[in-house]
Structures are given as structure tokens and as C-alpha cells.
Length: 84
Image 1 (cartoon, rainbow, N blue to C red):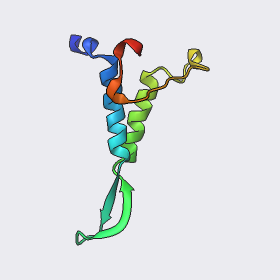
Image 2 (cartoon, rainbow, N blue to C red; image 1 turned 45 degrees about the horizontal axis):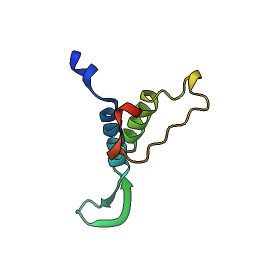
Image 3 (cartoon, rainbow, N blue to C red; image 1 turned 135 degrees about the vertical axis):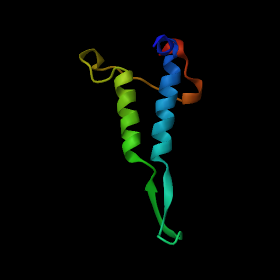
Image 4 (tube, helix red, strand yellow; image 1 turned 120 degrees about the vertical axis):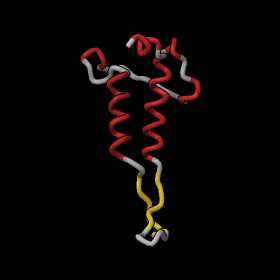
């Protein structure tokens, strides 16, 4: 259990954002014979929603202290754990 205390906040945020982004990507729908139908669907909207909800809670949104608080994440590649 001690390992989890050493995980940087930026790592958790990056992973949750990666899960959400991957799950929201569109992929082609194929028919039963493996032919493309020309339609697309999201990979896993449920997984994306769960990741975004977890991120929302992790960042502390939805609390009384949160009113008026804004967070701006420009890119997940450059998250600085000291600024979170």
C-alpha cells in the first residue's frame, strides 16, 4: 500500500486523460463478414465517462470549496506535479 503514496499526481492525471481520449476515439463498424459499413462508433463511451468522472473527483471538483475554481490543462505531456 505504501507504493501508492509515491505516485505523482501528474501520472494519475495523464493516465486518466489517456484512457478517456483512447475510449472516445472513433473506430469503423464492420458487418458480420468483416466488411466496413462506412459507419463509425466510439470505442468505449462508458470507460471514457468513468475516467472523466474519476479525474473530476481527483481534481476536487464538485465540492463546496470548488465554486468558482477553474483548472486549465493545456497539454498532458507537460503536466508539472508541483503545479497541480
